[in-house]
Length: 427
Image (tube, rainbow, N blue to C red):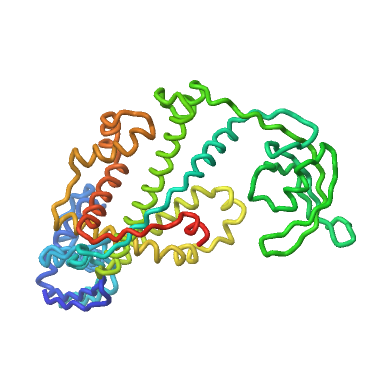
């Protein structure tokens, strides 16, 4: 068998193989034997006709029907002998059979090229550490109390601790209502400092059933006139910080006083800051490794992942597809997600290669560290979580990936930069 390989792209090749008729005979004979097993020839029981008769009557047809199987076998032989890491099944491009002479097979196949990962140590990374603002503790406690406050009907707003239900109607300069610009049963918390200043002032001492006009500024800094009608007023009555209440909101019997509650909230906020900072650092480490290491991804991998994303999207949006499925463009869906999918696949190939090179595997310490992160959050002993995680395939992937990323970080230079979280939100 003569072979010729042509590079189509970084992950795809064309195999051209020429087989002589002598090389084809064993496959043709095997095809005749298979055909004999199911052949119905007059005068013989099924499968009992002589091979010579089968060959005489159907040899040409059997040979042509066997060509695709021979092409598949030829590709498989090449892949095994040359130790090619093929992905997918290959695509038959052409079969040129000259009876009693030769067969030319042309097959395209994708493969995962051999690659090395080198640039994953000694990276220069930046870790954002966020300033802690003590006022956040008071805001969080206020939020918790707000969520658990009881609502008592009242007739007039007397301070900030009220909720007001209003209907609003946009009006023009002459005070006439604008059709289609009405909102019903909108609830406002008077003490919400994010409210438009004029709206907040308008509802501060409003009475139930009262109607007022108010000018507000929209997100584009344009003035809009509204007529608002107060439909309901609720006074917020906040719970006291009793031991029972503190246990209910913290799931912690040891927190019994306001000061302990404040410390608990502060610890939780600081922990969320640390988690945000670490997540950003990990994403940065991954991005650097992907940027600095060239790895080619076969189209087959991309297609499989995009197919999966598309099926998941359709499953989650069944009602939409019932009504508007004809207008949905699958090609646009795939194009929008191709870049992110390529990035994801490149990282996973690099991640696995790093693990292979550094001989990194999950051990009991990894499970323990991972479980300790969630133990206090769920109020479950870390030892019990470990057993759950070990049986969960997704969690095992998370632990494995975390180990690789932290290995990269531990072998890099990390510069800490203090930032204000409010600046991050504004940006």
